[in-house]
Amino acid sequence: MVTIPAPLRGVQRQIASTLTKALGLTEPVQLRRTDPDSVDVPLVAGPVLVVGDAAPGEGGGDGSGEVAGVVSTLRSWGCDVREWSPETGAPSEQRWGAVVVVLTGLTAPDQAAAPVLALGSVLRDLARCARVVVISRLPSDATRARVDGTDDASRRDDRAGDGEVSPAEAAARAGVEGLVRSLGKELRAGATANGIQLADGVDVLAPAAVGTLRFLLSARSAFVDGQLVPVTGDGEAPADWARPLAGKVAVVTGAARGIGAETVRVLVRDGALVLGVDVPAAGEALARTMNAVGGVALQLDITAPDAAERILEAIGRGPFRGRLDVLVHNAGILRDKLLANMTPAQWESVVAVNLAAQLAITAGLAEAAPGLVQVSLASTSGIAGNRGQTNYGFSKAGVIGATQAWAVLLGEGGGRANAVAPGFIETEMTASIPAVQREISRRVSSLGQGGKPVDVGEAVAFLASPQAGGINGQVLRVCGQNLVGR
Image (tube, rainbow, N blue to C red; front, side, top):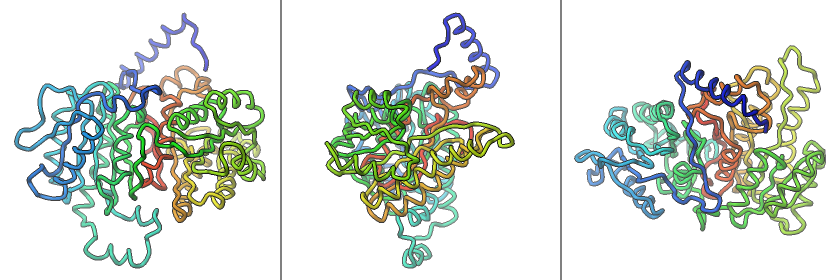
């Protein structure tokens, strides 16, 4: 990390202040992140208000029972929960740590007004780094059918029958996406807005739905903002929420430094035993990282033809005893250049490391570990593109495509594949960007700042955990709701 000399720090602050005022951007606050010595304590920054699309006792739809279930779950986690009702509104004089809005019963757009406006009435009373989480239904069940492999003829027949979502209901469900993304841009003081979209047939209290809610409420999701997480399966509740990966074996590539090293630390904190992989040139840093957490280091060029075979050999020895549960494709390189000036070596090396090596290694490991859970590092550059990064953007968009394909293949064996797309993260690489450009990159997110490597590691650990078992073939952005792309 580049250290700014003391005399220049005032200049840096002035640049930041000027940009913020000129562009009407958010002033950054220190985000609430997980204390590794006291994980998930407290889970939220204050009392939790639950708002539903059907008040308890009204019996006007599925909403009442599902709201009661959410309330009960939150209380089982030790949260101080209050309920909104159409008759009495929200309790006053609170500094809410979170607001959970249950919109799973929406069947038409006009039903959204009461709960959404109830949410609006308490936004000025949110605590610092509060959470808003909206639970709704996917606009259609096509995603679930595609991902879990149930898109057969019989299921298509079912969808053509009574289970078909009407245009009005689809509109109401889709409208929630615009609500959440817009709300994320309005919140201040480190508060975030995210959504959980349940496929039809997935209960609001399914382990994966509850597990996603817990992640989005907690400090683990500090830099996740404006995102909607589709949950298309049931998942599995961990025995210990603070150590959801206890007993699991994980392989992490690019583990020596930065995001890879932080991912290793979070996985180990959550209970996993980790094999860290990096190139021989990073051997010293890799050894430091793995020794610090009690993991095992493997010096390996992941583009080597026998890379998968060597990983399997390492897993077969020592503490791993041949077990492999999680594969994190973190390794990646940059060779930025305008396409007009790009050499074949600059294109080919980026694609080889960032994409081709992932495909080959997963192909080699999936046969030996049919229930493999894979998490790959994509990028917002692969979603929205970035000047001077045609090679990088190609490789990261390819990672997303590969993730969606692996989701189907791994799903057949009980595994899954998802991707994390970081935005501007404070690393050695981004510290080399010119000061003004770096400051702009920080400020163009709804949280008004860059993320930290640990924020990416937290998202990877969540997707690797059993509680995310109902999430497959998805891309979770960790970007503070950066303005680029969706």
